[in-house]
Length: 250
Image 1 (cartoon, rainbow, N blue to C red):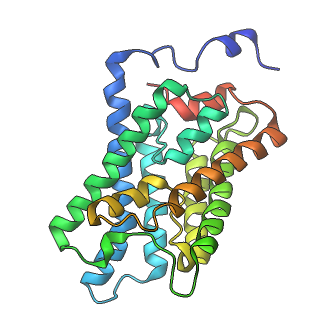
Image 2: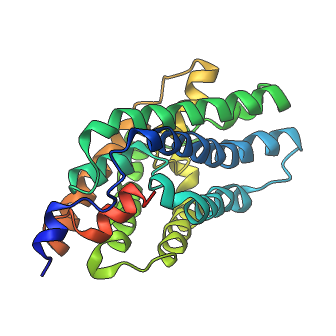
């Protein structure tokens, strides 16, 4: 049973210290930049190199990047890197709602800068890594796959972050492994984005938001379902482990 102190005191006593806020927001910009650089960059370099990347490498790269980002920067601000994750942490009571707009804006900025860098280095090729339904698949199929994939991703994140099952640094391996696995079986359908920020960068830089709704509705809907599943499995959130994962310990 959690103590009264754990219920009343946030994980980090300095979380509301404005002197550290710029570091947390910068970590979200930088982390999402690195994620999208790897995720969108796979498609761009594949196009630039005449197909030398391949689907296996393209879906593995962002998973490994997330692993690295969580391990080297997760303690600063939680390494959400994804509006769906930020939403889920807030719905679970692990992350304050007033911080959500800043985190989401930081993630969108990081994704956009990554795509601008790819455009500047390689040109406007490979659709700048845009996520769209694959040939032969409908938007409805793609949005349902994105929803299902995000249910799994957010479930892994919330599950490994809870006090009952906090696995420390191994949580980064679980999240990275899930991202790779999801991409290996589903990327031909939807691109396996699971992240509105990941899909926002290419859409904004190319000016094509025609299919972007898929990568908002699917991931955010999946996050809502995952939060409901977490409640069924573990009850209410806001425990010490969840706050530690969502807020960092800076």
